[in-house]
Length: 309
Image 1: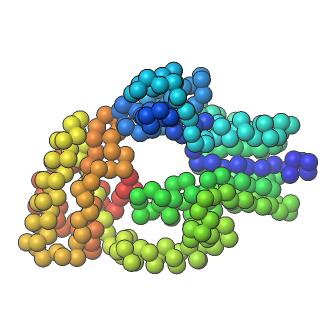
Image 2: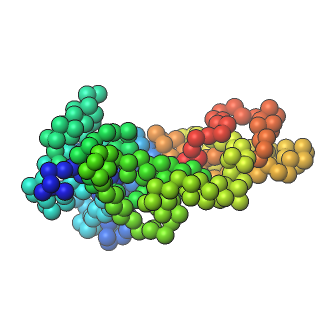
């Protein structure tokens, strides 16, 4: 590709240099005090960052839990990928397109214009690369860790992953030069990966619809997401269990046995901006008829939510 004066795109839907920092002595992981999410290592200049709330701190020299100096970084992000590509292809001109390189409003257009004008040979980036870019010189797209996002506890995770993979793959071969797409994954047998690798929309649609029907998820049912947030974790948990009990009684009294109650459970991101999150999911043909008789003050209500995370 490089010796033919053509371009390549490398897609990795993770930012930073390491996605997980932990102590090898005791296993303690460095997490955000506001969101309880693992901190991402962004190098010595930016340090450790939380991608949910923006919290940052320096890399500690010793474990805050046991005092050991055995602090290690694991995982791969776009910044680390850029370093590895530089080592492997020192003659290549690189650009990185992610949230860390686009702090200003004009940065997106600047990066894209440089790459379009062939001032770089390889563009490394996150989901921004899934946009409808027309880049005739791109003859190779490499997708690293194609399964990222595929195993999230959300019924739309497969759909979103398939969309991103096919959109990124579509950046190659948009000219008579042709193109090639390489997917690197630890789950090559997964139906999403298989369908995306063959650009097979029909196969994915049929398989996904089959799973949705078996599990009674949309479009074969409707969902309502009830979320409670509070500074106190016990308070959030108590309110969630109390409401779930009332919902169960309401379902019994109305004879709505086709309506399922999922939860109460902590949300996937159990803590955001210092608030603990508990949620209840209602699934059925008309779960909204339960709402008028419920005490929902302080609850956030989403009908047909775009995400369950």
